[in-house]
Amino acid sequence: MGSIVVLHENYLPVLLFILVGIGVGIGPMLLGRLLGPSRPDAAKLSPYECGFEAFEDARMQFDVRYYLVAILFILFDLEIAFLFPWAVSLGTIGFVGFLAMMVFLGILVVGFIYEWKKGALDWE
Image (cartoon, rainbow, N blue to C red; front, side, top):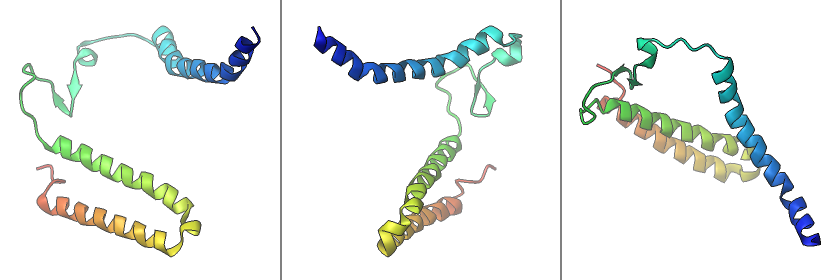
């Protein structure tokens, strides 16, 4: 019986963390559903995808530029995600860490210039 109490005490913070996470995730949705106004019309109920009207055929092709913009966003978002910890630890990693990040940024800039020259950022 004593081992069950110890097991319960060890996992109680984990259980509380899971319950709070579920509450924070589901609570606002339930509050919005219960307290928010619901006035559906044709425009609100219509599907919206990638900035243009939805079409009947799911196999219809659409412009590859949407994929390119998404890839560019992920690329530069990841760049920023690497820059924050680098900037925080710059004092401890020294000049070698600075040079490594400059090489990384240089490669990204070369890729960005290549995409720019190829017209991946042009919308016309």
